Every structure is written in structure tokens, then in C-alpha cells.
Image 1 (cartoon, rainbow, N blue to C red):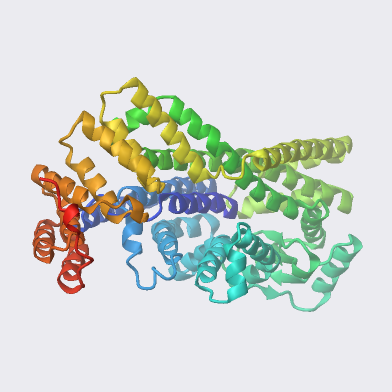
Image 2: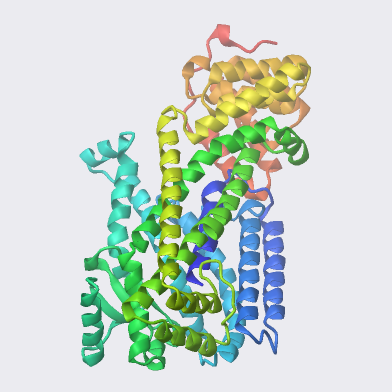
Length: 613
């Protein structure tokens, strides 16, 4: 379950990271809240229906139901982020401006609220199937702790990024301002976290050291005989300690912990417990934990490398044009959404199939290590049979990250009869790792060879510009393409090019209020004062208002009058914008009106700068 939750939470983090905070919500607050309430009620109702009495009778059905509801929770969460613009409202939280990480934190809390609904409805079925007694709060708390441990590194790194942005220490700010400064600090912190994370996780899970006594000393002697050291051997109270499982955390002996649930200690005899501990030692001896870390690094490389070919394919396929016509969204918005969907698909493929393949075979390697360490397969087979029976008859329950218990038993029995299968499996794992490392090295080398200035956002912008230029060539009489090109140049700070593109669009269709407004706003507010042309901006804004007196266009006219030194007309236009504004936007227009009423006028326009008739 923790590994499946890892993939789910990765999807949630990607959704939050790729959407960003919109400038304005697509829906007003009232309709958005109504849709959210209806959707939340449907989700709660479906969760109740899925676990209604008598509910699932077998563990396989229980886990399948929980998995379906978790996927539905991700879909519902994506609806909140992409269509209801939840992050727009999260950005209004106190201190969110100073600590932007509060926005994704709130997003994660929203997703966890969906899971809370699922856990609450799942508890009776879980207790019935696994013959357990978990109070509601204890059951929810146990599930929440599992997920928080997975989220902890991301939560701490995003908070660190915010704190770095707030630092006032001069030399440190100079380091962060360098091209590799912030990534270097983040990497160092991540490496530090990699070592101390097991200590944090064991505290968050309320693990306690295994009491001193014959059992602990026997386990310590077993570990020493295999030349493996642990910082501590701890009791793992997972679901009040009633789950039959063990685990190992940490890549160095000073931060490595052996975790055992109390239920496992009670259910196993001495030989069986020795086989389980040998299995966990096998993970350490085969260096599985550092390799898992390498897989996460590899995902970042592959995701970054795959983004450019995907964008090229999208832009060359004609899908962008059809999506723009259907949705009315800008090319960059469509590319961001398409890139997000592609990244989500990559997460599922990479972790479900590639990572899952290695996890299954690493578990088999650990099983075989236990077989060799104990000298026979029978103790570990008995352990698996007990887990299958006491866990709710889950012998043939499939899993993406483990072979089923039945498959593991069969392979152990076959390897006990034919030891040649052990080396055969080790060769299979080694060859697979070599192929993965070659693929990983090729990806790293390819990224290293890419031009340094070809960042992802710049690549997006250049590719969009290329396709728009092609559309202008194919449809020279269509004013939409020059206007889109103008928007792109404006976002990139290429003001002369943006002006030329807007002018080209107006030559093809002079009566476009949005283009008139966009050009006027650029001439008024561009960061480069050399392109300012207040008289021309006033002329354009007046024409745009005549064609379409929307609030944002009236605001542009007010700004133009203000720059021309006419407070009275600026205030009148700003007041008209405020009166026509949507309730969600009134705060901005109120501030604009107050500014025009209160602030000192800019330098009056010279006589030769009077607007043209």
C-alpha cells in the first residue's frame, strides 16, 4: 500500500506543480463552490456505496475498491485544480504571498480530505476482513501518517525554497543568484534529508526500540553474522502493530533501521523470524535502497528529456490548432495542460511498470538471500502462508510491486529444489540494472549536450512561436495568428516584436477591441520605457472602449488618461470599470480608482504628445 500511495501522491504533486496559480478564476466563487459541493457529495456518496454493508468480503476486493476510490479522488482533485481553480483561492490564504509553499500545502490537504472520506468508509470492511479492532480516529491517523511520511521530503524541500527566497544574508543571496546556486542548495538539502529521513519517519510512525532481552540480542547477532549493522531495531506500530510485516529504512548504518510489527513477532517462531530478518538483510546486502533512490533521479531525467520531443510532436500534429479552436485557450495554456497529462502518463508507466519490475525482482532477490542464509525454504514459506492466511486469505492477491505470495512460495520451493534458479535470477537482475544504467546514462548525456539556454519554458515559447509563424504563412489573412504571436512576444518581454504583431493583426481586422486593448496596455505599462507611447495608447483605448466597454478595457483607458495627466477623465473611466466589474474583481478596480484619486499625477504630456484626432 505505501508504494501505491507513493505513485498517487506523485501524481498530486505534479498536478499542483504544473497548474500554477491562475491570474483569475474561470468561474465566479458562487458557481465554483456549488460545483465543488455537488462533486464532494457525489464522491462521498460513491465511497459510501462502494463500502456499503456487507461490503467487500475478501482482501483482494477490499484493496481493489480502495484503489478505485483513490484514483477517483485524484480525478476529483484534478477537477478542483484545473476547472475550479482551487489554487487561486489558496493563494488568498494569510502569509501565502511570503510563503508560496502554503498554496501547494493547501492543495495536498484538499486531496487528503478526499482520502479521509475513503478511509472513514473503508474502516468497517477492513476490520471485518482482517479481524481487527481499529477505532475510527486511530484508523484514519494510521493512514494519514503513512501518507505524511511519503510527503515529508517534498514538504520540507518546498518550504526550504521559500525560506531561501526570504534570506537576507548577503553571501548566501549571491550564491542563490548564481545559475547553479539554488539547485545546489536544494540538492545538498535533499542529500541530507536522504540520510536523516529514516530517523524522522520512525518518529512520525511512533516506532519504539525493541526492548533489550534474548530476542533483541539474537537478532543483533544474526545481523552481525551477515555483516549488516542497524542504528536500531524498532517495533513498528503500523495499524496499531497488527499488520504482519517488517521493513528496512536507510542507506547507511548510522541512519538505517530495522522495523518489525508486534503482530509479526507474535505470529512467528524462531526459525521463521530468522528467515524474515534474513530477507530484510538481503535488501541491504544487494544495495536495493540506494538503487531505489537512483530510480527517482532517473525519473527526473527521463521526464525532462521527454518533454521536448513531446512538445514537438504536439505542435507538428495539428492537435494544438484544434484544441485552441475548441477551448478558446492560449497555446501556452494548452501546451501546459497537455504536458501535464503526458507527465502523469509517464509517472504511471515509469513507476507501475519499470520501477514495479525492479521492485518485484528485488523482493525475490531478498527471498533468495533468506533461502541461502537459512539453508532451506521451509521457514520463509511458512511465514508467507501465515501472512496469507492471517491477512485475509490473500495468497493469490496480485500486486504491481510484489509477486503474489503464491508466486513467491512457488519460486522459493523451486529454488530449494534447483539452486541454479538462484544465480539465474541474480543474472537477470544484474542485466536489467545494466540496461537501466545505460539508459539513464544516455539520458544524462543527452541532457548535458543540449544547449544551456534551451530551458523548458524557453523551449515552449520558441516552439509556439515557430508554429504560429507557420500558421501566419499558411493563413496570411487570419488576424488571430498575429494577435497570438503578439501575446507570446509580450509575455517574453519582446515589446517591439509584440507591437509589430499586434499592428499586423489590426491591419487585417481593425475593429478588434481585445487587440486594441492589448496594444494600448503594452504602450502604457511595458517595462522598457523606450516603447511607451501614451498618446497612441489613449487613441487605441478609446476605440476599444467604443467597441466593447468591458471593465479591463475601461481600466486601460483610465490608465491612458492618467498617463496623459487628466485626473478627472482617469477617475471617471476607473469608476465606470468598477461599476461594471464582477464581484470577484472589484477589489482590483477599487484600488485603481483610489490610486487615480489619491496619487500625484505623472509628468503632463508635452504639446506635441497630444492624442491624434
